[in-house]
Image 1 (tube, rainbow, N blue to C red):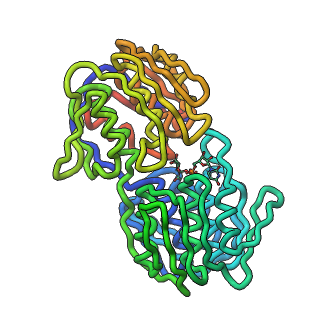
Image 2 (image 1 turned 135 degrees about the horizontal axis):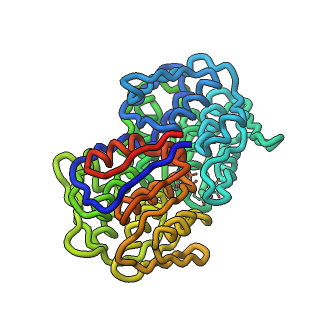
Length: 421
Ligand code: UD1
């Protein structure tokens, strides 16, 4: 298993190109199942989660061809060989459940294993299932699989999500594009990845209104056709690299960064003493002056502060002047990075969904272990600021969501290298 060695302490200066969004790409790829014509995605990130989705679509008989070093994905679902998504692939990644809606909508039936994914809480898929049932699907859970059928096709309906779910909104949105009649989704997720999906589906001929608000209306159509679509910028990768100069000092310009993707996060950075400036090419980030100040953070659905940046923000606040309180409202078990940061000298107390961080002058390098995707990169950020050497092990979590992290940080002067074993 690979690990990453970081020698911390130096300021970072330079430019970091931000890739296409993993989470957008993982929902745009299953959209290929909705049409028998090709769907091409540009600006795709090169990540192991994308390879897992490629493998899953391939197992269903779809063709996914990687072009331009993996930044272009040319997909075709003309002939599918099966509508069963097997446990062996699905278990690797929770986003696999996103094939359920499209398979059901176009083929009238689907069997999808219940997913695995990051160990950050129970994360059931009940909302996905309830939404599809509202569209007329008959569902049965058997042998760890969801067996879904919609004889005669799905039918448009009104469905209100009891709480916001990104994945469930995506699944039902995709399914509703081919349902008969009108679907209205209330309390829908408003994340930029949903907007990106709706824009792509519209290029494929879907009739959708209201994406980016909490009510999305979909008028079902007979069939969808081919399209080419660029994947939106990864706001989580963007936020992560914005934290690099904040934590080490120096100035980094995140190329392709957009303020509207990270507004709530940038507001907290500002309050902590970090300047974020919009430039012609992206966002330029540096510390205003002196030490970072403690700030309180509560995670919320978009446009609130994203749960996927909570671990990285905690790394910054570990060296802030004063006390910061972080409240995690989306996932119940998302402070696994806290004990690892403590190994580096941080002072963190966790009670349920609240972490209280008392800033220390300096973190110290230590051997630490990545526990999930965002936790792993928070350890790397902490290591960049720490005195001495840190070895982060189990970095396969990192590779699921961050392409070429050593290269990107190394180009800004970080002492970081991968140790292969
Ligand atoms: C997506 C993102 C993930 C991000 C999360 C919240 C992808 C591939 N992943 O995950 O990086 O952290 O949004 O922004 O896009 N829930 C249920 N039942 C369901 C569905 C969800 O109880 O059927 C719960 C979850 O356990 C969680 C909350 O709802 O507590 C929000 O989850 P959701 O928005 O669905 O997250 P994902 O789509 O899985």
